[in-house]
Every structure is written in structure tokens, then in C-alpha cells.
Length: 116
Image (cartoon, rainbow, N blue to C red; front, side):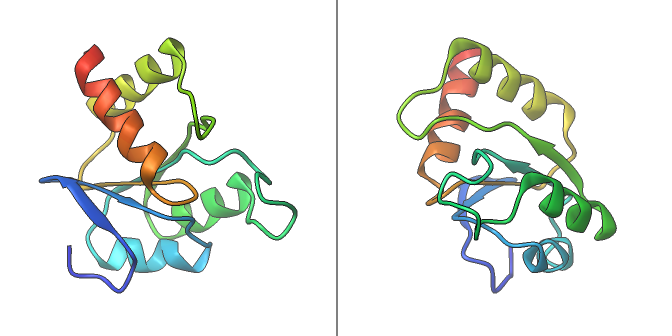
């Protein structure tokens, strides 16, 4: 992906990023992403963090599919991993996943691949 966003490719058609803003959704669409998965719980770092609803509205306005699958930074349950596996099968690619740093999204992706 050719983008100014701080993305890191973890597969041919999947990238991860640290916390994204509402303004980043239009940039993600311009970069060619078709779907976004937010793995960060709302207000994990306080009220200055944009909510999932705010990001979803911006993503949909930019023409992106959007899903909210919040997971804790140190642990992903079997149910969360299974839910991510479903999203990996269903969402159009290229896919952009994000959390605070990108690490838990990367881990969730890897776990979902192993579990599917």
C-alpha cells in the first residue's frame, strides 16, 4: 500500500497500524483499503481517543467496510480469535487492522489464522 498512514504489512493484503483517527479513514480508502477492523476498546486511553462510533461513521463515509472487535492488549479469548477468523473470511481486502500500537492486531491476526 502506498500511503502516508503508519501501516505495516503482515500479509499480502492485510496491514496493521497504531491508533487511527476519523481523518485517517479517507486516507485509508485512497490508499486502496476496502475494510477496517478496530481492535482497540473505546476510551482505553481516556476521552481523547476517538470512539468506535466516530471512526465507523468516517470509515463508512469513505466507502470502507468497518468492524469493531475490541480485544485486551495482553489477552485474546478463543471467542475473539474465532470472531476475527470470521472477519478474515468475510471482509473485502485489502484489510487494515488497528489498535494502540498494531501489536495486538498482529497477534489477533496470527491467532485467527492458526485457529481457522
